Amino acid sequence: MLTLEQAREILKKYVKQEHLLAHSLAVSGAMGAMARHFGQDVAYWEGIGYLHDVDFELYPQEHCGHVKELLEPEGISAEDIRAIESHGYGLVCQVEPKTSMEKSLFTVDELTGILMAAALMRPTGITDLTVKSAMKKFKDKKFAAKCDRDVILHGCQMLGMELSQVMELCIQGMQKYAGELGLLGSEQS
Image (cartoon, rainbow, N blue to C red; front, side):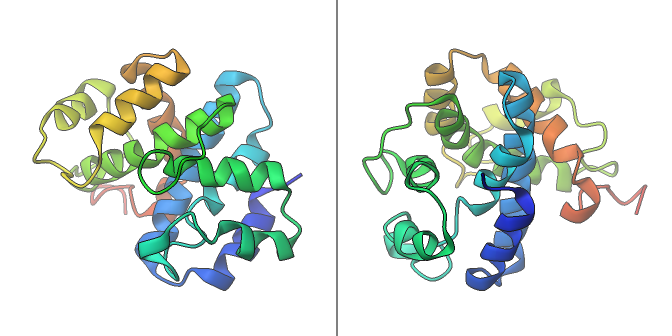
C-alpha cells in the first residue's frame, strides 16, 4: 500500500517546482484529515494526495493523461492510479470519483488552493485560520479566482458533507504541515 514516504520519493522524480510540491503537500495533509474522518488509513490517503499532480509539470496541457505511464512502472496499483486520475473528473478526464477517497481528492484539490491563499495573507498563517474566515474568502470569487468553487461544491455534494465540514478538516490537515508549507505566518516564523 502506498505511503507518504514512497509518494515523496516518486514525486521528486517528476516535479521540481516548489509551488507544485507545496500544493502536493497541502493536498496530502487535507487527505490525511479526510482519511481520519472516514476511519481510513491516513498514510495511504496522504500518499495518494501527495502524488495527485504527478504528471502536471511534465504535461500541463494533458494533465491526468500520463498518470498511468508514470506510476505503473513505480509499482503503483491500478486502483491507486484510478484514484489519482479521478481528481480531474469533468475538467481534464472522465474518470468519475466513486470511493470516499476519490471524492475527497476531487474536493480538496481546489479547496486547498483557497486555504493556502487565505493562510498566506494572515500574520498567524494557518495556525488559527477559522472556517468562518475561510468561508468569507471562499465567497469572494475574486479571491484565489483560479480555484474552481463549483468543483469544490460538487465534491462536497458527492461526499454528502457540508462545505464548512470539509473546510475544517482540510485546515486541520494542512496545519500538520504548516512549517513545511510556509504557513506558520510572520508572527511565528
